[in-house]
Amino acid sequence: MALITFSSPMHKDKTVYAVAGSHTQTILALAKEHHIPIDFGCQEGNCGTCLVKVSSVEGKRRPMGGPLNVREVAALLDLGHITKAEVEQMYLDDIPPTQWRLACQMIVRDEDILVEYPSK
Ligand code: FES
Image 1 (tube, rainbow, N blue to C red):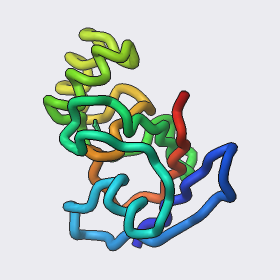
Image 2 (cartoon, rainbow, N blue to C red):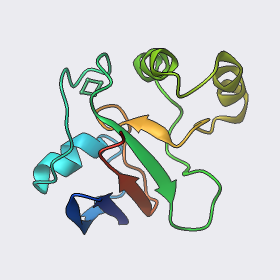
Image 3 (cartoon, rainbow, N blue to C red):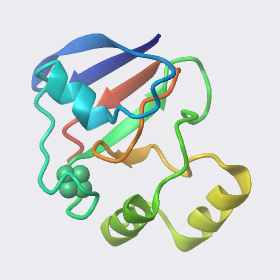
Image 4 (cartoon, protein in one colour):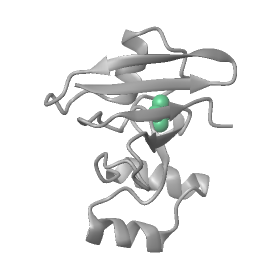
C-alpha cells in the first residue's frame, strides 16, 4: 500500500492509503474519494486545471510514477512545465521528466508520494 500525502497551504495535510497493484486509480480519483479539494475541469488531460506537484518521500530525485501519457505531455508543454527535450529523454528513461503532473492522468503506483496543490 502506498501512502499519498496531499498538502496545500490552504488546507491541513492529509495522508491516505492507495491500493497497491490496481494501477488504475488516478491522483484525482483518490483525492475525490477522500474529499481533498484539488481543482479540476475536463478530467481528460486537456485543460491543465488539475496541475499538481508530485515528490517522492523516499529520497528519490523524482517519483517513479509512470511516464506521462500523450495528453499529459501536450498539456504540460502548453503550460511550459516541460520541454520537448525532456519528453524525448522520458521515452528513453521511462521516468517522468518533471514533478509537475496532471492529477487526472497520473496513476498512483506503489510508492509513497507527496502531492502539493494548488500548484499556482
Ligand atoms: Fe483537465 Fe485534469 S482536469 S487536465
